[in-house]
Length: 441
Image (cartoon, rainbow, N blue to C red; front, side, top):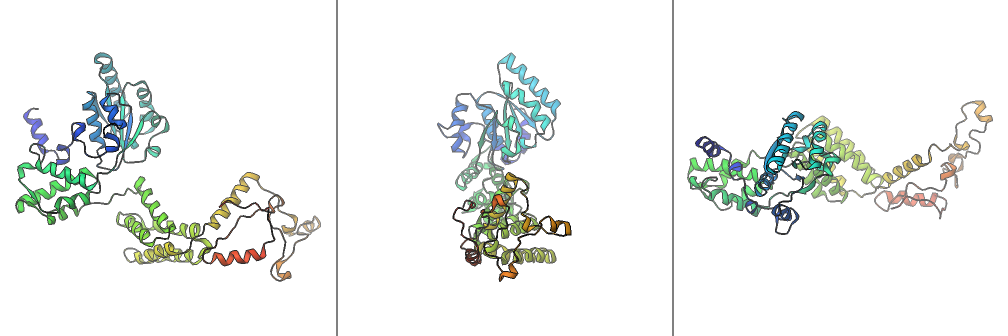
């Protein structure tokens, strides 16, 4: 390394300086890199496949790709899915082909944010991955089954990386404080009790963030004295953000957690996940829309007030905005979670829709047709119709479904909340139908 390169390396962020170079330096990911694990065996045997490294930010995707290149003595070619085009990709592939043919040296093509690869780039890369001209290592925070096309995905192994736990993050921070050239040993800092643990908690599994916070807190501590205090750490953490991507997988994960907490009648879990979304910057109207859907899909007639309250919360937020609108949102969220549950209405309409799609437009029985003209009356429209009002409010035994479906049951109320009363009433009204075709529970 010349003096210019050494100076540039010293000015690099701490997270970059502390990046592992060998497999044994990598912290965490034992499910992939522990002795005997599939990826560890592939690296040790120098038989690595094309792969997609999938995981949250700061879990070591780029680091692992560079370590693999070092361990296998492969040429490492980084490629930007955003900045580079097909022409640049062809140049990289041509160089890889010459390198392989002349020196027998393989090329690892590392594509960070591979979920941003456009169709032209993916199509151009596919044959070269298939022939082994390059070994593809893609890195993504997005679910690869959504973000990478099926053809490319079928030619690569997907390895999921996990966020580092607090113990490993503390070990990483201690390593940074104790290293000379790469770390912060020259600052001669001592961490106050709990300071490194606070950084590890705030980093939420992200090693890059943990090291960035340490570097910022260390700069403050160096000016104030020789101790890395909790106050310095808290100040450095204050600019942090929650792990939540409104367009990515974590958006769907947190939304799913909210819905399942409400469905599981846990108002504590529901309000926690709702506030996670709010604090991370989610549009409150999206949350309210999900609660409106939930009120009908998961509560329905077990508590008809649920839909009324969800509509009222939506209207209240429209008038109040933030932050006062949170009162209505919280009231709605905790009510929906606490209410009795029934998906009977949902099951009813989906079962009816399946019959319609399977059987087509079955004819309306003549007795149910409206004889709006004299000719229609002469043709038999409305013949045989029994008016329930003329029979005390209910025409016992009357059939309102098409003949082919006359014994079908779609709506089966549950013994939950108000719907139990509906179930009891219908039990007294419906004619016995022991062979009735009912939707499966």
